[in-house]
Picture 1 (cartoon, rainbow, N blue to C red):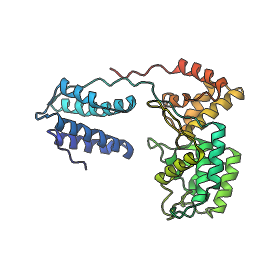
Picture 2: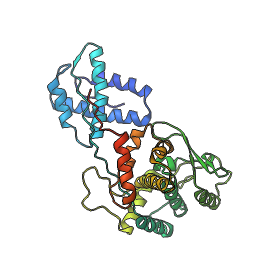
Picture 3: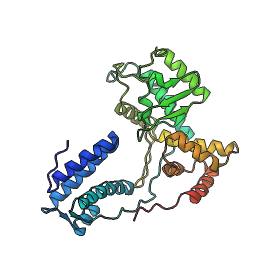
Picture 4: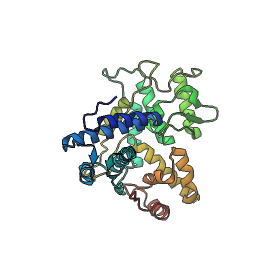
Length: 327
C-alpha cells in the first residue's frame, strides 16, 4: 500500500482501500498515482489542518500538467475523495472538472510506409542480444493481427490458443481495457496466415499455450519487447514525424490500430456503405464503450486520403459536440 505523508494520510489510505474493492487493477493503479501526487502537493504547500480551502484546491489544479484529458481524469478522482471528506464532516472545496480540449491527433501510416514496415519485419534476422528464439516468427504475426484486426498490443500478446478459432476465423479477447470481453472476426486471408503460423510454431492443439510465447512457454512476449522492436523497425524504415505538434502522436505501434480504423471507414465508403452505418459497428469491434471513445479514431494528421477526409469531418460534426465536463 502507498505510504501517504500529508495531514490527510489516514483519510487517503482509507479512501484508497475502499476504491481498491470496486476498481480494475488498471483503474486502481491510476487512483494510486493521482492520490499520491495530491498527497505530495499538500505536503509541499504546507497544509497542516484538515480543511481544504478553495485557494488550496485551485492551487493544486493549476499545478497539474499534461494533456487536458489526463488532467480532467485526475481532477475527477480527487473530487470523489473531496466529496468523501465532506460526507464525514470535513470542509473541502470541490473544484469543477476542467474542459477537455479536442487536442488528440493520431499518426496514420501511408501505404508506402506500411510496405516498408512489413518488408523489414519479415526479413530482420535475430540478434545475439535477443533471447527469444521465436521472435522472427512471432513478430510478423503480431503486427499482422494488430493491423488486420485493430487490436491493442496488450490484447494481442494475451491471446492463448483456446482464444483462437481457426475454423470460424474468430478471436476471443477475454480481459481487455475496462475488463471487457469481445469477439473479433478475422478476414479469411489473415486466418490462413495465422493457421500457417500456428502450425510452424507447433501450437495446434495446445489450448493453454500463449499464441506468442516468450523464452518460457508460461509467459507471453512482453509489451516492452514488442514496443522496442517496433521502434527499431521505424528507425530502419526512416519513418518519423519532424516538428510534431503538442498532443500529436508520432508514429508508434498503437498507430496500427488507428490505421485499421481509418481503412475500415475508407473501405466502407468505397463499397457504398454509409458512414452512419459503419461507425457503431466499428466502435463495438474496437471494444469501445461509446461512440465518443471512437471519436479520436476519426481524426487524422495526414491528407493521404483527401476524398475520405471531408466525409469524416462532416460525420463528426454531426454527432460529436465539444466536450465540457464543467458542472
